Amino acid sequence: MTTEVNRSEIQGLILSGYGHLNYGKYLFLTVTDAAQGRAWIGAIQPLIANGERWDSVNEVRVKPTSMINIGISASGLRALGVSDTSLETFPVDYRDGIATEIRSNLLGDQGASAPANWQIGKDQSTLHVLLVILAQDALILAQRVAEQQTLWQAHGLSLLAEEHAQRLPDNREHFGFKDGISQPKFKGNPRKDQPHDPEIKPGEFVLGYPNNYDTQPIMPELNGRPFGLDGSYVVFRKMYQDVVGFWEFMTEQANNPSDAQLMAMSPELRVTWFASKMYGRWPSGAPMTKYPDHDVPDLPKEALNKFLYVRDRPTENAKPGELSDAQGLYAPRGSHIRRANPRDTNADDPNAALKTSDSHLIIRRGLPYGQPLVTLDNIPPLNLVEDHQDRGLIFLAINASISRQFEFIHQSWLNNTKFDHLYNDKDPIVGDNPDKTDVDPETERYDMTIERLPVRRRIKNMPRFTTVRGGGYFFMPSLSALNMLAKL
Image (cartoon, rainbow, N blue to C red; front, top):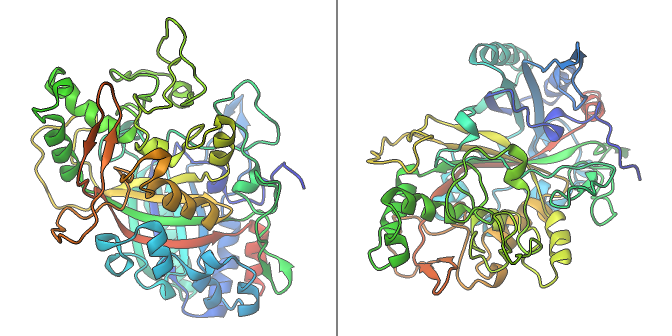
């Protein structure tokens, strides 16, 4: 089994975040005729960006001004004429789709986040194709979308839904925190000089290569021929962010007069500190594990992710970056970043814990959608007024196994009330806490625990700040597999 991936076959979004392309369109298409749909696949295939390294001119890398990638759902493959026999070679999670009752229970898609309330994907039977178009500016994006619209309409496809997204300043999301910092990387050779950034085998994200267990996920077939090689699965989520609700709650809790430690801080610091405890990072992205007392806005990029929780043992004269945070005294054990990637915690043996964490990671893609409500460089925001506009995150997760990676993270880490020796806590940012409008006394309520000395602070009745408004499971085939599908 090789460890060198075939970059020319793999769709580009799997290997690159395209950080220079700040504008995006996520288009959801329905195939109305199988033969015409396959002809469209053949027509768009030459336009699909792959993972090849970009050319250089005079030692300066020339970056593309736009890119196009596609993913196809199980119902989309069926609509394109793929037989049930071939579809059965795909894993059950992909074939079932994201909106089944089983998946909703696994992911915490309940209440306002239930598929019945979604804007995109409520009916998975017509959610066939995800077309991703990214561009460096709004004009180029509009041109590419217009070109693609002409192409799909000429082949009988219809537009089911679309989402416009745009990178916010300093890679912030709508709550005002820097996003997309921790991303796994995979290489063929170990990186011994960077133990904080361990080697992730390519089979965790691309089919046909060894994963961290030295095995390979199920290899889908098309009429008995390998179809999955160099492909990957992409999870789509549209996630609305309740910005006013988030900051009102943080402000109220941070100004609790019974909390003497918080009352000793300045008003601005206490609110920022409290909100940062939910994330485990300061708004700039600085990890609280290394910088527990205040934000450090100008850290170099590599410093934002250079930490573990247990292995950085304290010295006699400990400096920031040398503190052990095994007990969560700096970044709480239930904070978002510790749940999304526990690193070397959540097990008695740090080495075993790190190996487990590295075997369940995802590559995150996507962009914020909607206009910011807060001034992103002025946190905490003051005097917010609800404008009832839709804003949040178009979230894409890339993984070779939806159940072992994306679904595992949600069930075992984000929404696990007993995560890392906690008792009744869920992820404070994306966990399936009850809707704030839910006043049913029978509804289960959850907490957020802030570990500290001498006494921890437990926040009761955590509300939901992030609501799922769309979802889908897609397969992102290799370029050769797209050709195979077009010629079916």
